[in-house]
Image 1 (tube, rainbow, N blue to C red):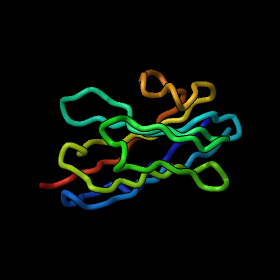
Image 2: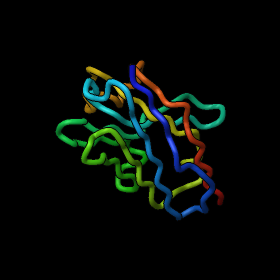
Image 3: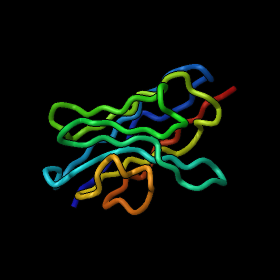
Image 4: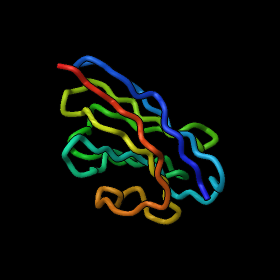
Length: 126
């Protein structure tokens, strides 16, 4: 089992920055990739970014590429999402996810990752 706890959400003005974090505990040694999805009100959940736990290779959705950066700590148990140049359309609940086998490069396909956090709300005001 893996537990994921997000933190760092909040309210920010358009053009501002925010960093959300995801701390993993439990069977972290089995994690193959971690990443972020988001779900805005009335919309489906969408892929944001993912990172390979071992190589550190990162992958992004087109909507956030160039504005968001995903990274991990040296212990490879915490993942960060640095969000810059935020837009009102970035408003959503951001969910951390971890998977034991799905490569980060294919997370854009969405789907059922092994573990999910409860989410943290990011609100961008115009």
